[in-house]
Image (cartoon, rainbow, N blue to C red; front, side, top):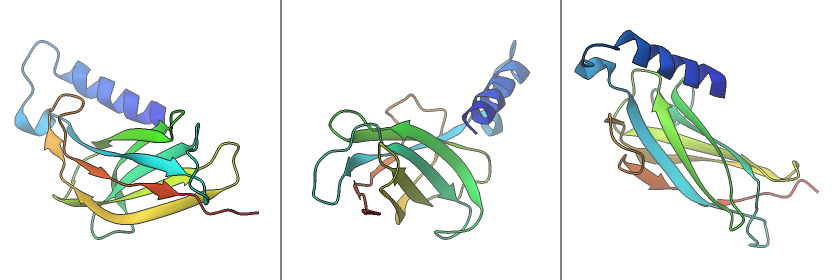
Length: 136
């Protein structure tokens, strides 16, 4: 899925080479950040995260996706590229799988606005802290 997003973005850039992008061609971005912790509160390094933005409501078809891995303090930041049709604000969902894989959880509900052509870190963002549920 990551390759698909990179290829889609590269194609959008290539289509506009030699001319300025129109308003509709400028990508929409939003971000989700937070920490991943174990059920006992310890930070989780290397957790795999996936953030999605939903077309309508907080479930069903998605309009954007992004991926990240948590750092040594359990922190993460996911930049979501809208694949078109983002509602503003859009409901986001974040799922996390611990490292090593096993413990996991998903959180839905916060909303974030997609903004056009903003620099990394300048997009609208929402904090989602995750506490992994033990599967053992």
